[in-house]
Image 1 (cartoon, rainbow, N blue to C red):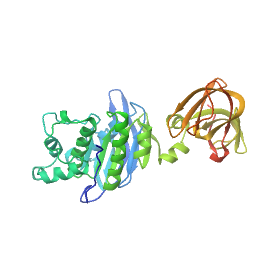
Image 2: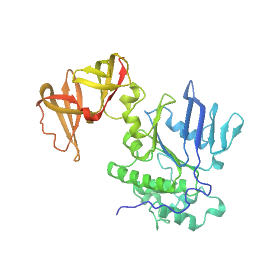
Image 3: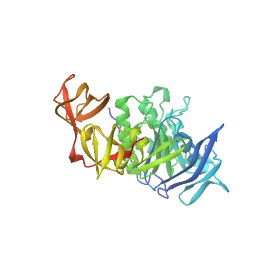
Length: 355
């Protein structure tokens, strides 16, 4: 049976959501910095996804916000309170920050109720708070269960309940969906998204999964080598990547060499309207949905992947592969010769000066 999250009135905190402001943060392990002059601002009640490759510093940033890492320099403010700074340090237990760890970090010898109540003060360890929080995450009646008897999705919900029980002002989640199988990941992701919206709690979650970042994040902050390289809405990030690296890292697409002049670029698939680059050699970013197959002999259909609601056609062209997103029936078969053109209805493609 599918479990549902339920928001409780006033569940986020008595004082409401707060902003998170990070300025000039530097953290190092060994020789080099993991975070290097990082700055970021999260609005009150916003859900921000931290997206980046492994080793870029995402988890270190979460731990610094929580107070589990002490930066060499920089400042962190939660609302009006500076919790980390040159002359400030508030320990983790006093920051009103909840954290859900990647491996859930449940105590195997303790019941669900004991796990959830672990972060509460002595007066808050009564059954009422625990029962309310478990109801919030769809686990009513499971207080006496042991973690080893729960499914992966249920253990993830217990970890979330433990983080929410003290009513934090900020919720941090480190790869919250990575330990779940595909079907359960989609279900839990949607339920958690719904809960975060209802609670209105400020949340920051780390992920390497672009789909999760786009679904759950009100905005997405892309990290690379210890810095934030772009912050935008999911649509803005996908449609207007700040540079070539972001363009290739976020979403599916290809960079076509071309020559731009007067707002268009001549490419191997014809003339493409472009924005973002001056006249001269350029690389044009084309997403699969920007392209259409037409009668012709320019390329050869190499693979077709069917997803139900649409399909992806891989076309070998001029020594490379272009991906074309189609409807459920692509209307072509492997080995067929086709032409490819840019769909003018898509507007203008993003272009970058040639490398």
